Every structure is written in structure tokens, then in C-alpha cells.
Amino acid sequence: MLRTAHAVVMHQLGRRGGLHVFRVFRRKLDPSAPWHFPAQYDFGVLTEAETLAECRDPALGLSEGAVREAYRRRGVCIGARKAGALVGYVWFAFETAPHLHSVWVKVPTHAIYRYKAFVRPAHRGKGIAPALYRFADRVFHGQGREEFVNCIATHNFASITASQRSVACTLGYLGYWQTDTGFRSFHSGAVRRFGLRFYLASPRNGGPIGRTRDS
Image: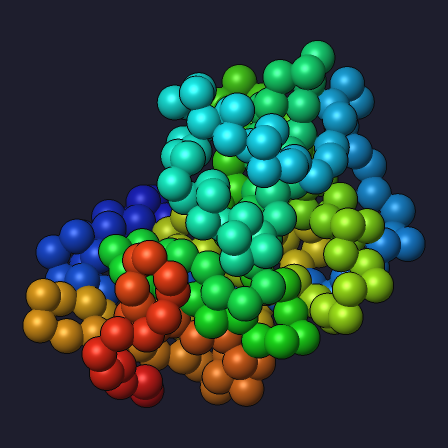
């Protein structure tokens, strides 16, 4: 009941008041750690051409413009397939990443930002999302980054559970207030020291526009 009430309150705060609050998770890269990957699923890095081909399926929530822009920013998409069909994916960013409504994320130089994870409904509950997150350790090992970081809405309990199952731990909280007349971001002390930031930016290139206030 408390979870339901929290979800309703946070949804209304975001929808009507422009206030959004997120829990931030961090996890050290550890490619040598043992991990159980679900049987009958194949995990791997998707090329730009492969990801663009998947845009034809509206159920995956991928658009050609967003995919091309992500790869232009050196983004990486890791996917899970069963019998050749893409059933889930997750994106990773090194510098900046889109959030929502012209709000972007600035990624610190020692970390990799994880965002936009998706698993088809018929394949949920099988550990695919945590497996995608752990497969990334092998992909990014040796690239000069020390850990993963991601942020999840405080009322998105399913995604929070998936992060915890991948052995991620809570770093802190961040949020922002956005209306037609202003934008203000809020970062807890640990998140501020880590270097993760929300900022208002141009949707085309992720560059800051106007002036933002940071608390």
C-alpha cells in the first residue's frame, strides 16, 4: 500500500508540478565476477545497423533519429536475443545522455552511464535486465572507466529491483523541477561529489541552453 501511495504521489508531482526525483545507483566494473546468464538467450553489443533495423518494431520503443544520435555520441547498445529475435536492450553513455523533455545527464569521466533499458513483457522476470547490466562489464573492461552509474525514478520499483539484483548499491538521490519558466536541479552530497548532473540542454546536441540553477 505504501508503494502504491508513493507511486501515485510522485506521478502527480511530476505530471502537475514538474518535480521529478531519482535514486542513483553505482556499481564497480568487475568482469571476473561470476554471473548466471539466462539459458537460451544470447547477449552482445549491437551495431548501429543492427539497432536501426530494430526500429521497424514499434514495440521496442526505438526511433531512427535517437539511435543515430546515440551512436554519434559514442553510445553503446547491448542487446539480448532469443532465437535471433531481440527481446531486450540497454544503452550506455560516456559523456552525455538524454533524459526527458530537453533534460540531459552529464556523465563523470570515471564512469559509464546506463539508461533506457527495455525487456519485452513476455520475457520479463527471467533475469534478463540484470544479465544485460552484468554483460556490460566484459564490454567496457579496459576502457578507462571504473564503474557504472544510473538513476531510476523513486517509484519505479521494478527497475530498482533489477539494479539491486545486478549488485548495484545506492549512491544518493537527484532530481529536478521543470516548468515553462524555469529549471532547477537538486543533487545529494554523494551524487554531487561523484559528478553526475542533470541539466537543461538542446535536444539536438546535448549542449547547455540558458542558465540552470543547481542546489
